[in-house]
Length: 241
Image (cartoon, rainbow, N blue to C red; front, top):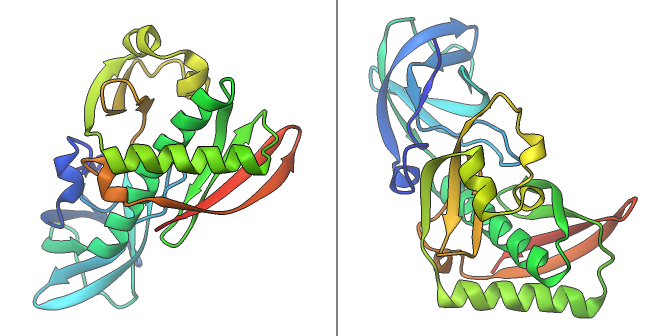
């Protein structure tokens, strides 16, 4: 049985904080639920933390992993049982920070693509305190970095709404070049994809992550450092203002 991911349906569902669920499997302190709001580590984004509430006791969720079946790592001696109904809540501060970080990554990647001759995003890591994006091929100088940050922050200040919808590969490729959306990284047997769009044409990207409703919520980004990763790849690190 797969886990129903409650945050996937829409942008608004990313803002849900509490939910009810049934325990479908337990392996020591690995708990599987029939549905969850907890985001598992994936797509470069770190996992959610929070609590499972059972019989008036709060059990900490320390880590979340998985793809179809989502496993919630809890503290030991949880005394939970298969078939039990539970309540749960996510750490909203951590979730919202990840939402802003992830949306900022989409925006920075889109701006870089437009500014620097179609440079591709080839990797990312999105964390609570700082995040990074790997670009290729690129060799950033100070002016390029300044332009990238300034243009991104200008767009954030102006604001633009995000939306989530399901699209086919053909529909995506008709709007955006495949190299911009990294379609080659998605298994060819996956035909319908969850797509996150920013504004009318700022960005369109297949993504299973959590995001804010408007880029203005990001507040702004601050450049931290750059690092060469070899073969024309440079790492751009940032945090939120």
